[in-house]
Length: 273
Image 1 (spheres, one colour):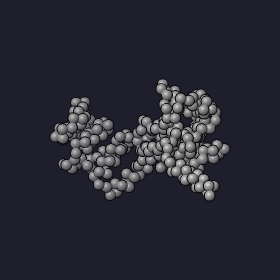
Image 2 (cartoon, one colour):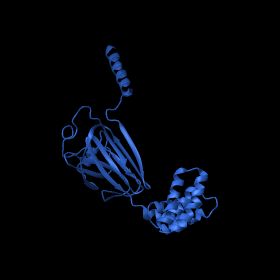
Image 3 (spheres, helix red, strand yellow):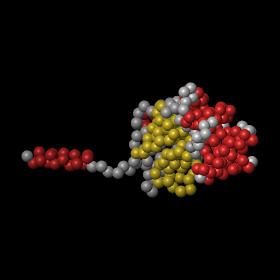
């Protein structure tokens, strides 16, 4: 009887402990970033320094590291991208690193498992050699994040302790976007024309077509000040300065009516050039 009571007590204690939630030493994290039309999503764990020497000690040089803790780090791209000039097809990838004192090796594998050991003997889809940069201050927890995000590129940063790596990512979507514009504008509304003109102008591509689209919007007497200003800017970039000044005067009046100081300055600058 005593043995049954003891076994029951142990089972109850184990059940209680199994239900107990405690903070993770390497908490999971996820980030999302849009680059152009490409969605990038990263799932990883964030180990901490905790008064230890990480690279070259806890994580020896020239050995594989999972770029995190626990499960393999997973990075997903919704469209094809260029990583340091090398093509990665849309899909999910696991990232492994080989730290070094000066240049790190970053291997990208098609994501098939959460166990990072499954990739060590596998062939990577691409292999990068990335120069190591040093941080001035120690970063306590591993961090993956993006900076310098544009419509065509971004830089993925890998930072931990005093180490920092910069991984350039490019998206080449101009051809697809151009096709989308033509297809959409087969039956467009006014916003579609403005959005298409804005994209073409901001990327300094097909400015004649950008002007054609914006003028379909500005021909309306109800065109907004920022739309008319965009027409003036496109004309200016096409070298049609006198036409640009004429349109800028209309845009200036609309900007003053809207009391928008930024657009007032933009149009005054066009007129005075």
